[in-house]
Length: 473
Ligand SMILES: *[C@@H]1O[C@H](CO)[C@@H](O)[C@H](O)[C@H]1NC(C)=O
Ligand SMILES: *[C@@H]1O[C@H](CO)[C@@H](O)[C@H](O)[C@H]1NC(C)=O
Ligand SMILES: *[C@@H]1O[C@H](CO)[C@@H](O)[C@H](O)[C@H]1NC(C)=O
Ligand SMILES: *[C@@H]1O[C@H](CO)[C@@H](O)[C@H](O)[C@H]1NC(C)=O
Ligand SMILES: *[C@@H]1O[C@H](CO)[C@@H](O)[C@H](O)[C@H]1NC(C)=O
Image (cartoon, rainbow, N blue to C red; front, side):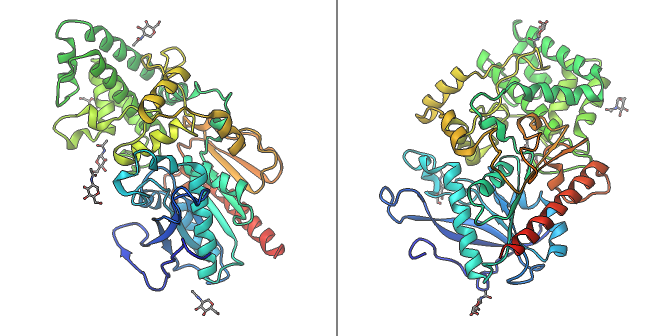
């Protein structure tokens, strides 16, 4: 392990960050920018951030709970993955959250990272390589080479926690892959379920809510074509800058659809501030407002304002609130959105657009052709779906072992996930009334019994994997 890895010893770098539910030590490890080609960038390295909490760890004995960071700053996931902290004490586990390269503070080339040729080093393989090096190094430095590692992740992070077990069973004894839509990486996967399932969430409150939302979009469409209509819509929705073009209107529709996406994904039973500040059961709250308004447009406005912090802002800037990209479900904001856009243009194939047929949204298409053209223009790349399928197994996971795939039935991503166990060593859990990886959140008095049961099952799997691992030593 000469060169490349300069490890900051845990005992020397205790940078204590307060204000989080559970404090962490923020550490950095030097990683090769390119694990797979030592010629192009030589032994050039970057600093990858990771967060550690060792207060429950039984050194050299307890397992390592390892969160495979996804598309954002790792502290955000730290703050929204309470399950790991809730169960660490009884397992005497060491907790490590690793940040994904090109996100948060782990930019391999600073703010040059998003240009050619540097952006080319953003891939799932490179991120998994970083995690494998970090785990190998940590276990050595901490005299923990015989400690089992359990991976955790949600959403894209859940895909990574499954993949790290697929690719590195030598390092990872088992994985909890929550709301991980791994089927999307199958080239022939259906991609039209997402908006349909967002619609179902609103329909579940009452079909009247969906009727009103459709009504609002029709009124909007009609108004947009009248003289002065765009200006009037801009006033109704409190936009900072009035819309003046078809392009503005198209973006505006995307901005509204994006609010509904997050209301559905984050339809948790209690208030959260994970992606936006949301009340408990935000879909129900939104439908309450929508049905309470005699004016359908006003209803859509109020529902959108829930996600966009309506009460705290004097007006909405639709261009800074929402970025259109290769992921119709949203790429987030800032530099993270550029990284995710690139991933959506290369290895990760996301859902298609909305169609006003199987869903309640206006027709905002996102076809293979649109994706291909967009990615070429934006990044100079063409997606390689068959490569992703070969690399990450897609639906063919018969040879997988020791992974639990959990999905909530309220989560619009759930139909991209694994719903049938391919063999007895892979667990599949459905959480009734659960939104996007609710099971990874900390326990809460408002939890449905289904998620409490799911967490118990997950704990039982982890116990089994750990004893299997110890028996094999
Ligand atoms: C680039 O990085 C430097 C230093 O890291 C920072 O001061 C500067 O604001 C960044 N520029 C942009 C455009 O983000
Ligand atoms: C690991 O073990 C070595 C040899 O027993 C010891 O010198 C070192 O301090 C240990 N490191 C940690 C982090 O416990
Ligand atoms: C959605 O489709 C219906 C039925 O074809 C149509 O009446 C309506 O105008 C469409 N809505 C929008 C917003 O385009
Ligand atoms: C509906 O409107 C009434 C009267 O304005 C108001 O008191 C009530 O809080 C509203 N309900 C919801 C769910 O917004
Ligand atoms: C809402 O406010 C919170 C806290 O100020 C902020 O983190 C979040 O990004 C805001 N969301 C939007 C959509 O503006």
